[in-house]
Structure formats: C-alpha cells, structure tokens
Length: 228
Image 1: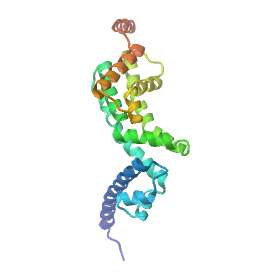
Image 2: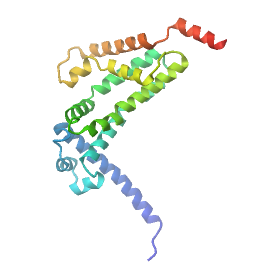
Image 3: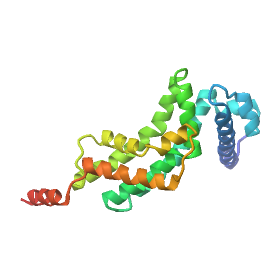
Image 4: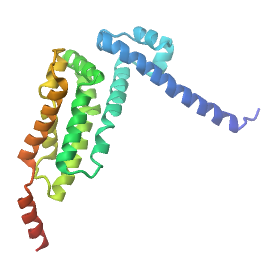
C-alpha cells in the first residue's frame, strides 16, 4: 500500500485555496453581524448563518468569538492602512506629503467600517478590554509606526525638527480627527462635508508644520554647518 507522492501535494494545494476562500466568507458574515449587534450581541450561530456555513465549519476556523473578532479587526485594519505607506514614497515635499496623508487619514477614520469598529470598541471595552488591545495593535499602533517612520526620515533630512516621532505622529492623527470624525462617530449631521474636510486637512498640516517644520533659512544654516 505505497502512497503516490504527487496526490497529497495536489490535495493540500486545493484545500489551502478552499480554506482561504471559506475563511474570507466567514469574515464577511462576521462583519455584518458585528456591525448589526456589536461584539457581545453577536453569536457564533448568527455568524455561521450569515456566512452560509455550519457551526462546525465555523469552529474549524475560529476557536471562539474572540479569535474571530480579532481576525476580522486585523483584516479590516490591514486593508485600510494600505493607503498610507505609498503616500510616503512619492518623494513629495513634507507639506504635500502631510496633506496627502491627512486626506487618507480623514477618509479612513470616517469610513463606515472604521466608524463601526470604533463604536464597538468604545461600547465593549469596559467589559472586554482585550478587544481594545486587539484593535490598537492592529490599527492605530501600526498607523502611528508608519507615520513616525516617515517623520524620522524627515528629521534625518533636516526638514522636520522632532524629539519624539511617535508623539508627533499621535498629534497629527489627533489633528485629523477634529470636527468631522467626532460628528460622524455620534451620527450627527454635517453640512458642507467637503469644505469641512479641506479645512481639517489644511489646518492639521499648518499646525503640525508650525510646531515641527524647519524654516528654509534654518535648514540652509544647518546644511552649511554640516559641511564645515
């Protein structure tokens, strides 16, 4: 009863593809249930029904609701944060880069998925503090690390003067959350949203550069000093 070497490899490949598709199917169902009922109100049975899989299949992929929520958060954050890194690689001036980043940050924060996650985390954190940790590690922390890395590069080039890049990144994200984000999170109406978005972006960049930007004359002096 000798085994044929090629067949197991083919079966494994097919199962892997099918598993990934099924996992995505489950996460799509979980998104709908979490959005409608929050974390505590969601049940694995409801998620299985929404995803069109059996509970047995669901538990084959995720041991419990916490694991499923963590996977959902990680996937959502990973996809949303993809827009930030390329902006920093365009070779634009600090001001133009910050404007582009601010625009992406504002739109990321007020996207339906981000608003849904924010509301879940805020409402459930007192009872399930690990949810907040999961969200922080997958979303804000990664975004701050990405931005602080760019800030460090600008400090090295002499275009910014920052002692604590992480703290400066936190400040920039906070500036991008004024007015629009707060109203969206509370489901409050917002008139002239496009105008308000431009106002938030422009002022976030202006305030950040006023605090950390290096004036042209100061940069020129620093460059001359470095030469000698």
